[in-house]
Length: 294
Image (cartoon, rainbow, N blue to C red; front, side):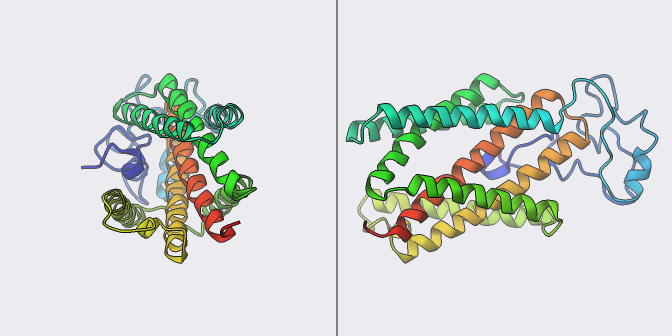
């Protein structure tokens, strides 16, 4: 059984009980696209590939079939537009928080509160069967407040760290997309299972480390210290963020290939935003570690 937590399962465009983007993808020489292979075969008036004479030919060559020209289906433009809206909301929230909230213990408490609200909204959306733009944009707004406050705090001690973190996030994202599109990484079911096992183990270890720090079991942040060990952990976290991006890219491609409903573009934007926030936060810490005590 796959988890409904997007951090664990990267919930995407599949409505079956399998891993989104992989159980739905046809295999070379496999059966024609139908109810079992295409999670959207019965949505919107039956199989969207029924009138596509090239669907079977695509399957024989092991390539996902091209989505037919229909209305109400998700396109790359839809994904780009929704992602722009979601990331834009994060940016606006961050800028307002940076500009209006001074670096104090009160603003830090507000940042933690915003992060908790964003987490709750993200979990509610995760367990919903349909995308809710209000929940996703609400998550983005509160996440933006959190990022704005912590970015200002980091900038007050390590000047320019947020800007470097943004550049680093863009570099990681661009490089991951380049490697993915070049075919240097093949996102298969085995790849996903191994990566998710590593990600879950990493998150569990970080949770234990957080508890030990909170109750005085370790000092100086333990694995999340500002020293060499913390830098190694940060690099691992960024690599995991890049892994999550490859799953996001694969799910988007599969959603478009199988004619996912247009509203599913919000889920694509949601997943991409969560991944980019993950990478940015880890990049921010990494920049601070390498900057030293300025």
